[in-house]
Length: 370
Ligand SMILES: [Ca+2]
Ligand SMILES: [Ca+2]
Ligand SMILES: [Ca+2]
Image (cartoon, rainbow, N blue to C red; front, side):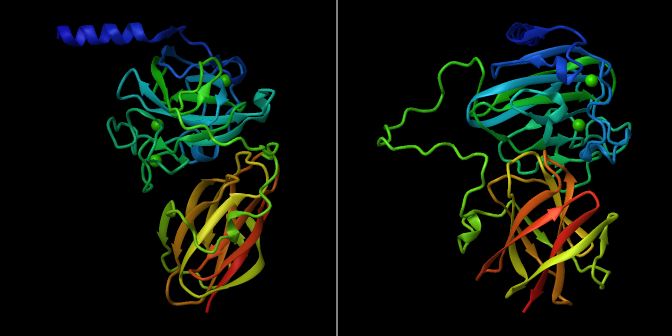
């Protein structure tokens, strides 16, 4: 008991105690500049702007029809040096369900143009559940590969944890943490990862031998590389997700998916049913989130597009030789429509297609197994 008391006291001292019920709007977010522990004692309400996190994709199947802000706390920061970023939100009351969104802000920090980069809505499967696998501490951590979990706890990756962020110097982000259970006790927020925030001292990177002086070309972050990863014949890394596509009951081609017109843009021929699909944003990485359909089945869900390719392995079912692969926009980045560069590698050839996905229509690629 005494030891517990001392531990609590020590923990108490190490936190920055923060004021109750503040920071309820993005524009009034708590600004932080160090990866330390923060404690928000009390939460309640949604502040002056109660509509700033409405119609959020991963919250659409939840009780509030897409509204992510509930007993909210907004925390923002600027990245000083590039690297990974992880964090843990620990509810002060262990049975409380916390959800969060990480938004990327534009360079001027204008909240009106924030873009979702991580979306976490998972929690109890039924209302009164207290200790399910999606309850307890939540956040971003190493070893996770998903970037979004919707409400409930029913998908294979659902565990209240999402993949770390890879952040670059100068970028700004804002985290929205919501106590979905009730107003009252808040949470603690701890950060990790290799990046540095605004007022942290020199880089914590291990000393390395000095690289030979090189003329560094000017940064080309705004443009995709001339030769994308698609040119490489064989994928080097392990796919993030391996999907055995089940046979679809529907045989005819898919003209409409979730109310959006679908047009076949190109045909590619593959030699095997096992294919490696890569996806990347063909423009600036701006928060586009897509899903992938094979015919009328959603086989990859809530993939955040990056300018570096993300890899997935799909096994197409037996029983037919033509499949329609469609990129479906779950949320839009700064530009519409989303344009994804898709490559399909069948063990022999890599074929590259750019597919557009908009609010009313989208493109697909017909894959023919030879
Ligand atoms: Ca608000
Ligand atoms: Ca949650
Ligand atoms: Ca997860």
